[in-house]
Length: 401
Image 1: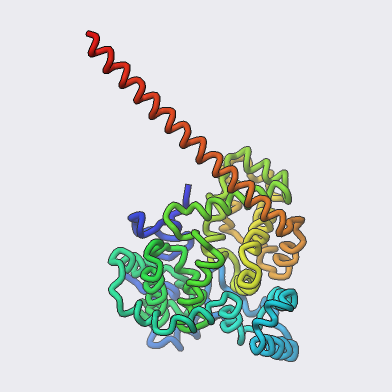
Image 2 (image 1 turned 60 degrees about the vertical axis):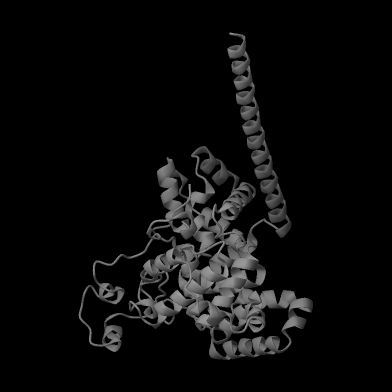
């Protein structure tokens, strides 16, 4: 079972919505946000709706300014100076002092330097330098008609409560269209997948479209290999790995979910394919991405394990059946603990799961899938041989008669 957001253009996907998307009834998202009020300017709109410092005016991603914890300016300036020093000798830091880079990413990258840091961590800055002019070439190409049509349909659905994407046909939506169109041309084997859109939108909140495009390319090639390919085998494999790791960290939860036949793909697809951009509050999303681009997908596994534990561990009595358990995992009501960035990341690093454990589970699941595939092929071959033998016998019988 795969959620609607994972459908591919190349598979002939219909116009499907991601969970939490708002749909238009002839109104723009901006009009919906203020319940149809007519506004003369965005300034007037801003006086009616309190926008957080990230540009959100509501939704799971909204950060209440009154609850937000900010670093003292002096501490923030010190961190900025350290990051600027790392940029000057980036290769040296990554090769000889990676643990220090990782430590600084875990603390949180200074907002003013986040865009540059993400491009350096992912390697997209260097890829862009080697491919100058290619993004513009992609924009001038026609592209796949079906991809283009589906991208256009999805533009209104990406963070409709963010100021950058409020206006239909506005600068934000057009930049998002450019990034997604360029990627569908760059990787025609993948085409366009709906789950790429929130990732591209996140990147555009921090950098211009060309930089966002190359960052998306680096993420898909280095971190999320095969996630957006037809068949979604990579995300299903990672779901099985997550479930295997859950058996080690929370055996009672593993047993409960297995008994109720809850498959990982039913709840973790959006988490992993969108790298939690549609799941957690924005302060946490940004801290998570700082670590994700530094350490890779193991960050997603650690956070995923914490999410399962927090949503279920003390609530199993409220989950007597498949339905209630799945509703908890989909987190329509965000548990208070998961709105605390310190709690989430502290707990994720406390897990009794090492990188070696993840590698072992990966090998185990790959071997299991390979064995299952080979068994299916043998069964198919045996059936074909049996059918062929039956046909030969019938033929001989007819000749004798």
